[in-house]
Image 1: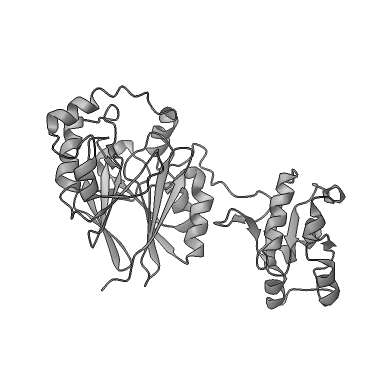
Image 2 (image 1 turned 180 degrees about the vertical axis):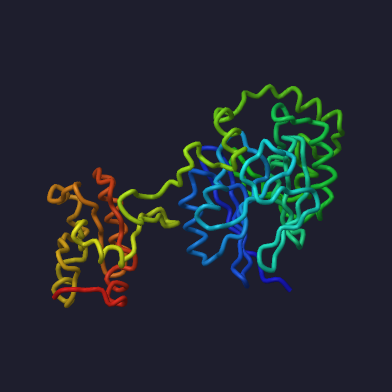
Length: 358
């Protein structure tokens, strides 16, 4: 028996894109579906915080409204990139050129590849090994379907893809689309069969094609940028991997806070400003602190930012790293750009045996 699949649904508000992180609970191997370039730090932080090892980054198709984060994930985790083989030589950087019927393993779990063209020629749906979930990209949306008016889309092809490849799944199979513009998060095969106004109930091919050919939608705003970038699997033209900060190995947590490890700070104390945001009575009670740290309690920080210089990066620290995380938020609101929270606070600093003063 498989352990219950780890599933996280993530959202990019700018493009209304859903990204899905799937993990095998026994081996901690994982797959990510439809990552977004601008959300890389968030998604990578979640992979790390869940103690997962990313095996593969998958795109359901060549998106026209956002740039994929697949290339970035490969650069930072070593995972493989998978997308449809139908893009042929136009596509650069994919490791897995996927065909209908392929199987993608991550640990003990597996995704089945189903070709569902029509929105674009290279659309794929990924189905879990127990047929309990289908990640349908832009083929089947919640109470809607993908448009068919660019990238070799075809309404008749999409009708057959949905009815033959998605509606043939069990009725209780959950449908997870790549986009939703109304805040809906999940549906089911049964629901879409019964209630989808474009392709559900008793609609036939003529109804569907007539509907789709008369939508007259404007093209996505990012289309001219997104499609060429996605044919490079999201690799920027300059080939540079963005980082959270240029001045040090800062990372963004899933909560959105910027953090840095204690070992790096200990080696670079002469180059940074450390602010200890513990309360005065705590500092009186405790025997140790970081040498040179400025004692500015969190409750006073907003009124005392004028005492700080932006010439050097600012590291905030407290007992365990919670209050100092809020201190980074305050400082960034005050215009300090080079700021990071000391991961683990003084607890971890002392546990690592790093130098302190009384």
